[in-house]
Length: 380
Image (cartoon, rainbow, N blue to C red; front, side, top):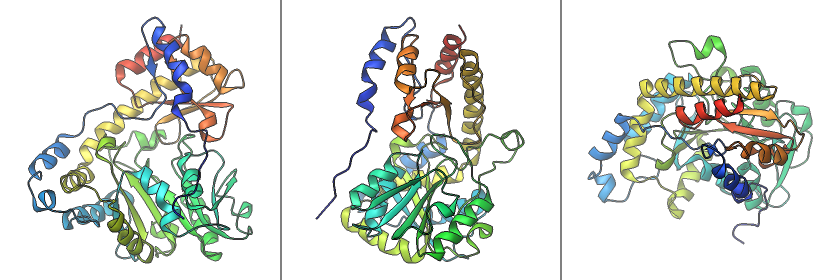
């Protein structure tokens, strides 16, 4: 039957008129809507891309499951950054052409369909729901996926989406909360789908100021998954940690019995990262110094943005994680606040896109100059 129809309020053309107003404002537009990186790609990544541009994995067809070097880099990264030994817990990994297609194809690759239910947070990244709809399955939105009582007794639940740190709210789940989700999902035969794309972006003072690069709890960590990857899949992306959004470098790791068939399907439909990009991805995973530099940039920008939004009248604090400031609209409606902000040249993302029309999301993925300009306007 192919893909099923989908519907979503997640349509960036809906803010086009606000952008036109913002561009006409004094000083022009400061776009804090889309979370698209603006900083340089690490030198190590660019060098790896160039050096590998005439490798066998470049002039020949690339390896779907990743080169031996990329697979080694993925295992090394999980051990160093996430405190996870993939082999010890029976896990495997497959690279994906960016994390968005990994999310959007997930329900289909797991063979979900009519009558199946996929749980997700009410306030969340819209592609979770779109992917479920594409497979023809049903979405169950709950206030808090960590409250397993809200979904564990619902018939036909096949999977549970977890997003920590969360886009858009910045909420971070504890290891205990994640372990509870894994335990409850296993009890009903459901798969835990843990989107951890912002795992290295957390902002609690004692963590963000540490010399070492800390990360939020991983669903594949032994104290969360009980030492087994059974029924657990984790998604990660290099888009934010290494400014590689245009490279389309991401991965799915977890239960070997689920990863293997996924890799086979991906090979048949050509969802394969180009060979030179695989080399660049391996370099990005290994370059922790570059990640720390980017972490510091985002920490400073978020701090400036939070202070400016407070001065403008929003009630907000530094997020626990991710790269966004999530605020309740002063008018009670995201679109009215967007109109007022556009008049001073600032464009945010409407909370309606994420399931909360009374909120707005401000992205810190803008240049230092853009953030400073926004802060100056908000403080007037």
